[in-house]
Image (cartoon, rainbow, N blue to C red; front, side, top):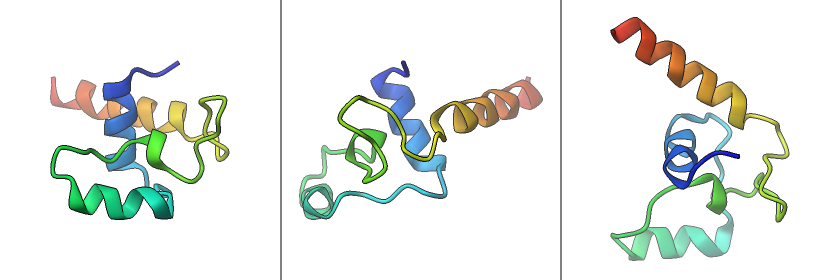
Amino acid sequence: MASKEQLRKIAIYCDSYAPVEENRLRLKSNAGKFESCENCKHFTKEGRCELDLIDKVLSSLAMENDLKS
């Protein structure tokens, strides 16, 4: 299971991130709120991505960080 911080980073880099409509207005009106998989329409109640992208995006981020090192 990805951490809350990872879920935020995934949402930033995921091409399929789509905020749930009810959260979209809240995200725009509350400066303290972050994009997160938890706010994405593809994120299930069981804490999984319907598109199975969490591991793929995390792997991509890890590879990018390795290249910077």
